[in-house]
Image 1 (tube, rainbow, N blue to C red):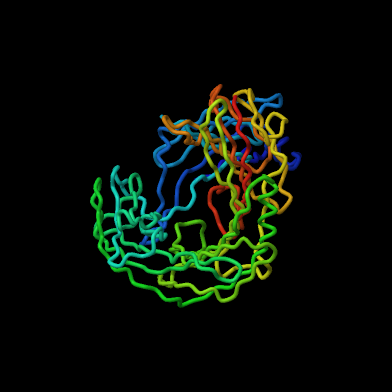
Image 2: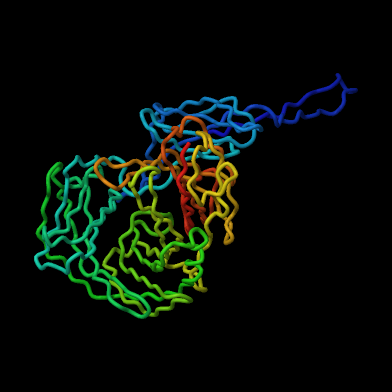
Length: 481
């Protein structure tokens, strides 16, 4: 994409002949309007290397929202093309929100920037020309020797970026994977693996799971709209590798307590996965090889944890440590509830683990408020353009924040709720007025605010993630416009 330069220097000659003075240059006008240009193109990593997939932006609403000093935004309309490029002309200099929403969708994504050129595509695993499986498309892996009940299993098809998880059902005598809406493996194009884990076994101060069996899935394709059954004898696996780990469990627990001191105690979870196409980009779908969890406090140290690695040598190892907590929401005036997890996580390539105990690289945002009021309690009548604000984490310096707003919806005939994403905002500042047109009076929402730390973060490519990668979440209480 060609960069747009503002105020190209122009030489001005004063006077005539030999008596003229030296040429002078005219400075660029810092207040001159600019054209913001950008792309939305994804690098897809498939079996034959990476392929660029353009997002057709011709049906999108694309705008720049420039904040006013007294509140609100001035809107500057832009346009997008099928090749994934967009432009927004006549935008004043300074910071603004780039807003993109697809025609017919209730969801809008936003990017806070002061740049005149921004690239919004990220990384994806799999070939870009896949087709979605229709409803009722399922895959049953039926072992010839039944494993323990509720054994965890997963399938991964690297050329599709597809990863699905299921538990062994004694009623079906199979691992059943629902594929509706996910990439449909096609004959001659897509092969993959099915693997399953051992049940939890006590080890050291916690419990461990490793690969128990693996099965290569042939590139034979699946029948769309029906259940495809594979009767198989997965290859049993014996450990052929080991992993040491040292974790500061108290640091992860403290980060969770900083959000909600009433949250129940949870385990610190260490996971080692094999990631297709190496570990230079993050995060791609990866196959679990070792899961270790512990409720211990202090420094958790384990040496020579055994695991099996049956995957190709080109697959890179990725290590993550997570601590989760659950927050329960209730729609005012109803008994409908929903549970939502928030997490503290750090992820490294296996070859670049720190020498000190693994600890959070960034903590959760603090003092999260709406319209100046703390969001630790339900907030009503906030208006349709409320103001979010927060303080930086006590630990680490975020590369950026990601604020997601979810609407809670009751499920008819049930005491549960569903949720739908209304908008996301990716920003480096810690203050945001919600733009008009996103929130509806009387509806129920909550905010999911994540502080991200990312190695080699590039503001001109804000959605390209790299290692090390870390985040810490803050879940707000519900609010009603």
